[in-house]
Image (cartoon, rainbow over all chains, first blue to last red; front, side, top):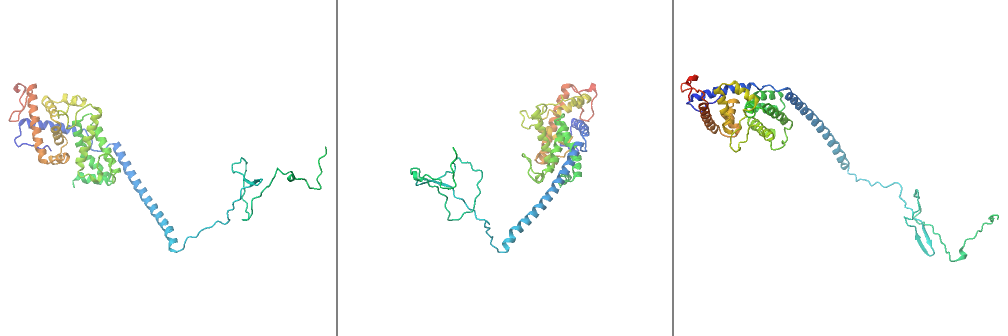
Length: 159
Length: 214
């Protein structure tokens, strides 16, 4: 195996080559020509993971293809029937109730939304379009406007 | 395509028996190379090499990390495996900073002696004087010269294969090997004369002790 580089081999060269060849053979014999258990296990793991990945890849490709097919069908079939999409109107009109307002003298004061009045829940009620919010008129300067009890059945409390 | 290349490609394609053939063909040779350059780390380096080779197959088809080429782009598995194990050896010694210098750009261009390694000491003690001188002389060569002779003599690669591994022409390898052998011979003769060890004469016979060349 050793290649000579000179046709006129010096006697020392042959001694050198014999010595090195013997040492080389001993050196090569130190090392195995068969993979050890650790390498064999790693190789088996590599082979197994490779097969697993290829199997998963095939399944993934199958599922992706199916999903594309279904998605394409859903997308294209309505457009083939030439139907314009319908607008779906809500079944019940949404009615917004007007906020209650209090008119003081000639001024109408609307209650602010942040008036501190606790409202547990407000159920919107359908109202007619022409209805107005109820107005309470109160003129404190005119004593005639003090309300009197006119109920004939009313009796004052006993003292 | 060579047997090695076909085995390598078959291995990458998923053939486990090709890995066994690849291992059988490469492991003793590159192990011998590692052993001569890094006696205490040869088995670890080769184990690391083969684990990386197995890892190549897992990453086949996509680009590898770092600067390593993708498995499909490896033109010469022999050169690839050699460079990989050499780089592993260099990395190992840069980490440990305890052993020989494998860098070709070392300041003196020579390998530091690793004769202090226990296994090497045992070899040294068992060998005869002239064998010890020859083995020691091999370590006194420059990094490139020593690598060349180790690949040729210890790993058993032909000049053409070494040229492929080192990325040069077989003629250049032949010339460098010729110079390396001449230098090795010169070192052996000088050391033998200095130590008073007999060397063979022109007719090839080894003189007896009393005929030692002084």
